[in-house]
Length: 90
Image 1 (cartoon, rainbow, N blue to C red):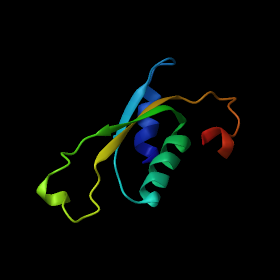
Image 2: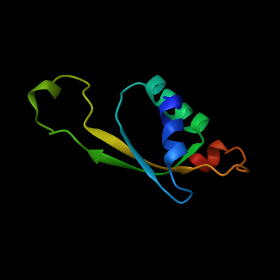
Image 3: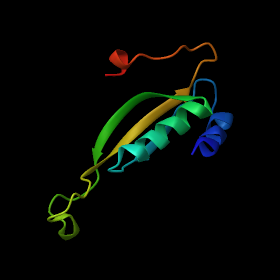
C-alpha cells in the first residue's frame, strides 16, 4: 500500500488532493491503509462515509455486510509536520 501511495504522492502537485475510497470490516485492513498513507508522505485531510450498498440487498441479509464506504481526502504531508495526538484525531 505504501508503495502505491508513494507513486500518488510523487505525481501529486504541491496543493493537489487525492481521494481514496475504502471499505473493510477489519481494523487491521484500516491500519494497513492508514499506515501506507502516512509512510508514503500523505495525510488524511478529510473523510466522508458514503452509503454504497442497497440496504435491502439479498446478500446482506443475516450477515455483517458493509453498508457504506469511506472516502478519504489526502494531501501531501509537510516535511516539517510533527506527530499527531490521539485526542486531536478523535
